[in-house]
Amino acid sequence: MIAIVDCNNFYASCERVFRPNLNGKPVVVLSNNDGCVIARSNEAKALGIKMGTPAFKNEKLFAINGVNVFSCNFALYGDMSRRVMDTIKPEADEIEIYSIDEAFITFKGPASEERARALRSRILKWTGIPVSIGLAPTKTLAKVAVHVAKKSNSTRGVYTIDSPAEISAAIQHFPVEDLWGIGYRSASKLQSFGISTALQLTRADSGWVRRNLSVTGLRLQKELRGTICSPVNEDVPRKQNLRTARSFGQEVKTYDDLKEALGTFAVNCATKLRKEGSCCTTVTAFIHTNPFKREAFQYNNSRTIKLEVPTSDNIEIVAAAIKILDKIYRPMFSYKKAGVMVGGIVPDSQVQLGLFDAVDRSRRSDLMQSIDEINSKFGRDKVRLALQGFDRKWRLRQERLSPCYTTRFTDFLTVKI
DNA sequence: TCTGGGGTCCTAGGACCC
DNA sequence: TCTGGGGTCCTAGGACCC
Image (cartoon, rainbow, N blue to C red; front, side):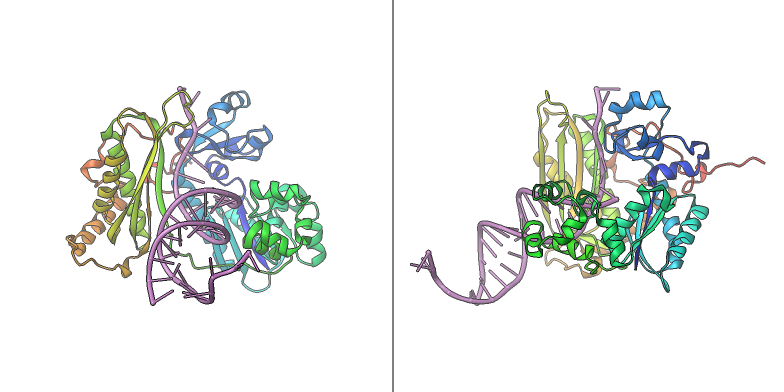
């Protein structure tokens, strides 16, 4: 049996852990730049606030209903996630951390609903985060189970699908569009062939499924029938791409401001690479104008540079990004978003050196290590390239940011007795 | 005024190799 | 109708996930 542990309304729940006065009240969390709604407490969902809708379109709804609105605080969510996962680990034989708020596990010893309930209580007690758990023979069915656990109050947060009869019962009325791996496109395709429930998909001809939904669909069908196609996978594969991209708090016009932003994003990518012990072979940079401003002239462009020798060096990756900027920058536009992406990622232990390489790689790697150590001790970008600047006109809007209760000394809660 | 960020996998087609 | 057979690598586009 495979279990999935899924945190309820995760970001909203994190905000509530340190603000218990918000329990029972509507809470929403906004995306970067305070742009869209990306998490909602149950009370906020009940008010009809939709996932992914722009904040400015909801302002009235927020005001009338006294909704508690937060800018997203990933330092907090990341640390709370770690706490939840650390609580799960001792119970798990295998654990696959699937996202910031979900993990697939197999239990040490026999799985049972009682154990799942005990785990759920422990996570709530130790971290303050409410979770739901689905238990089933495959990941896909576990996802169905956790969906049921969340939707129906009578489950009290845990739902098990075990026997063939229970599988049929669970998927009989389960909409195909809610299945893990079926998105908007495939759902409407299936609907047009008269398939609207998971049970109908299970019974469809496999050849037909293969032709219409590719092998991905075929695997999904097998998993629904109870055959594991995607086992719980503990080892985290090395990332193939990394990116840092941001919408700007205010539109950016000048070359210098874009250079500062792209330089900072490039350093960010390089730092992520070093953290994973990786190097990249390609650097891509892009800039674009605001697509929502219909009346304004639009411009999007990007380029990719292939590097001679794979690297994770701030200076080299920044240089590549700026070289691209020089090629694609056009002065007459106002830019809203930019980003840097690195690809062709290889382990830093397997870097093929170049015959005509001019960089002293061992000294530079010492330099990067020192920068990482200093910055991890004293704060991000304390030591930076001059080009990263201090202006940051493009900085994110984060008007309703909560404290980093668990990761910053100055933000710790003070309890007065 | 105002609309997020970061990933993965699959397929088809082109280019190239022997 | 039909043109050899067997490969690899790369890219773009589509679809999906959180």
